[in-house]
Length: 170
Image (cartoon, one colour):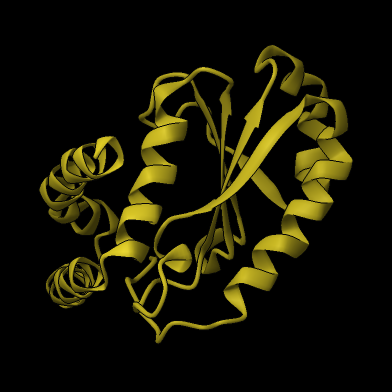
């Protein structure tokens, strides 16, 4: 059973992201439009589960199918859409996860939503601290339920998403 464990922000997370993206871009070469470090490990200074979230924007999701074996060779387990329409989700590391890979086709609104969330949080340290406090409380309350932990963050994330859109448009 996986337990929720937050750790102090590690400046090395950015390098781990870059290293993994380099491997993935070699694998996917012509499909990649852009890559982004998303999730809590991309937010400056806050505690997070030490799992690097990578978003890759690709030209065509169908063309990913021919790379199924390559993903497996890199240690990734395919999870399908995994709750987000139009996404291909992969996990690396089993119960001791190291990476989550979110792949979307160009034009999917989730790409901008994820990028904007991180940008907003990094531009608003007070909001990032509030997020960290919520995550800390949830990690204690739901230490053995990743689903309940994630559900507990949902309303906060939706509210930040709405604030981030207003912030971007000003």
